[in-house]
Image (tube, rainbow, N blue to C red; front, top):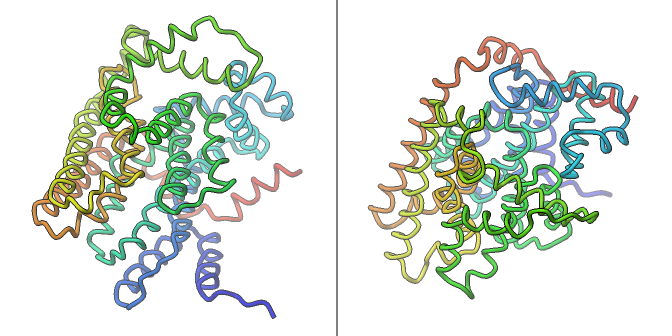
Length: 426
C-alpha cells in the first residue's frame, strides 16, 4: 500500500479548487494562515505559495496594457505566430546576439498557445511562486505566527515592486528572482544539488544581465578572504563594469558562454552614465514620476534595511545576521543597487526588487528581536512599505484598466489557461 502524506492531501485538494477558480486559492490560503495561528503546529508548507502564484498568473493573463515593456513582448509573440522553435532560436531579435534560449522558448510557447498573454501569465506564476516560497519557508524557520507581521510583509512584497511592474518587466526581474531562489536553496536550505545549479544557470539565457547578478553571488564566496573590499567592489560596480567593457570590447567568439559574457558587459555598460545618457530610454526614466519615487523610497528602504542588519550585529555580537551567507548576499545586492542610482535607467529598481524579495530573511527575525530599538526600526520599515505600496498603486492606476483586471480575475479559470497549453501540443 502506498502511504500518502496528510499534508500532501491537504495541499492537493485546495490546489484543484484554486486551479478551477484561482481567487478561491487566495481565500483558502488566508483561511489556512488564520487557522494555523490558532494551533500548536509550527510548519506551513512553503508550497502554499502556489495559491498566490495562481492568482498572479491570472492577473498576468489579463494584463492588457500599452504603458509598459510588456506591450513590446506581446507584439513580438504575435510576430512569430506560425514559426517553428528552430526558426525562433535562429531568427529572434534577442537571440541573434545573446543566445537567450529560455526567453525565446517562453515567447514561442506563448505564440503557439494562441494567446500571447500566456507569456505574462507564466511570468506571474514563476515570480510570485518564488517570492512567496522563500517568504513562507523562512517563516517556518523563524516559527513566526504573528498574523499582523505576516500581512505587513506580504503587502510589502507585492506593493513596493508591484505586480504590474514585476510581470511587465518579463525577463530581468524573473532572472534575478530565479537566482535568488538558487541562492536560498544553497545557503539556507543547504540543497547543493543539480536543481540548484540549473537554477543558477537558466537565468543566463533569460537576460544577459543575469551574469552580473551571478557575479554578485560569486562575490559572497570570497568575502571571507577580502572582507570589506568586497563592499568596495559592489559600491563601485559602475567603474568595474567600465573596466570590463574596455577589456572585452571587440572580443569575438563562437563560444556561447564567452559571447554571453561579452554581451552582458556591453549591455550593462550601455546603462551607465558613461554609456548613453541622452537616449530616449534614459531621458524617459529621468523624468518619470514613478521612477523618481521608486529611487527615493527604494534608497530609504535599502539604507534602513542595512542599518537594521548592522545594528542587530552590534547589539547581538554572538548572533550576527550579517555573518549569515544569505544575508551577506542580500547586503552586496543592496549596495550594488545603491551604486546604480547614478545610472539613468531602470537598473536600480531591478536590484531593489531582488532586495525586497530577500528582505523577509532579515525582517522575520528582527521584527521580534529582544531589543526594542531593532523592533522599532523593523516596524518603521514594514509600515513604510505599506505606505509605499499605496503610493505605487495610485501612481500606476492609469497604466491598466482596473475593471479589466477585476473582470479577468473573476472570470478566468484554470481550464481556460490549460486549453492554451494544450494548443501548444497540437
